[in-house]
Every structure is written in structure tokens, then in C-alpha cells.
Image (cartoon, rainbow, N blue to C red):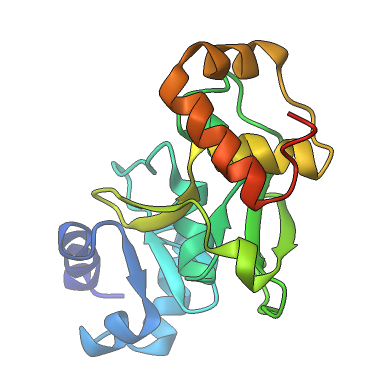
Length: 190
């Protein structure tokens, strides 16, 4: 490939914030063959169908890249439970899989380069507690802390006792936790 192709792909990094779609690459003048060669040579990393990370030599992925990439694959997906608690700074260690919530009727494929544990929620419960997080690399959906704690209780996940104790000490957080627990019908367990 010509040298200006590599220069051109480097210039796209800041314009597309690291992540670029196939249609964007085609509109920038890259051919499907050039895209394939750039993937083979490591200048592009395939994230999911139709989306790439501009790898280059000096570019590093953000710390929350898994969240961004899942939402590129499925824009309706929401980071939930232990993963949500980790990315909000509540849990100290990253879980070995990314917990993702989708609506019960959503059957879209999410083939990622990392382990994903998918949870299906009913339409009524799905939209409760969603926050949109904007980063310099992209946007993703994440449940707030109280909703994540309730889901862990409801679905039988492991949760640290000290996290619940911290929330109980903060009156405002605890009141919100009880409201979520009532909506999700698990108030008795808390």
C-alpha cells in the first residue's frame, strides 16, 4: 500500500475519536481491500461488525473500552451489575466478564473480543436507572449504583457486604436504593 494511506489512517484517529465505522472509512476513500490489509497489518482492529479501533502504533484504548465497544455493537445495551459497580469506582477489581443488560426481546448478536455475560430484562424494568456516559472516545449506557446493587441481590450475584454498608451509611443513596428495591420488588430482601 502507498505511504499516504498510512498517513491518512493516522489522521482519522482524532476525527473519529479512535473508533471508526466501515461506512466512514469507505466515505474517506478507503476500499474494502485496503481496510482488510490495514486489519491484517494491525493499523485497524476489528471490534465488531462494521466498527474498528484505529490501533496505530502510539494509540492506546481507554480504560472503559469494553463498555464503549459493547455499545457500538448494540447501542441499546446497558452495562449492569458488578461491571457497572466497577466502572463507577465502587468495586476495586474488574470482573472477569462484562455484565450487559438488554431488553428481553433484543436478540442481536454481540460477538466481542472479551467475555460478555448478557442479562435480559423486561421492558418495564429495563429503563430504570440508566445513565448515559460520554467519554472522549464514545458514549455508553450504564446503570447507576443503586440499580446495580438491586440487580445483584435480585439475580443472586455476589456482592460485597461493605458496599451495602457504605450505601446504608449515606442516607441519600440508601433512600434511592430502597426506591429501586420497591420498583424491582426486592425491598424485603434488602
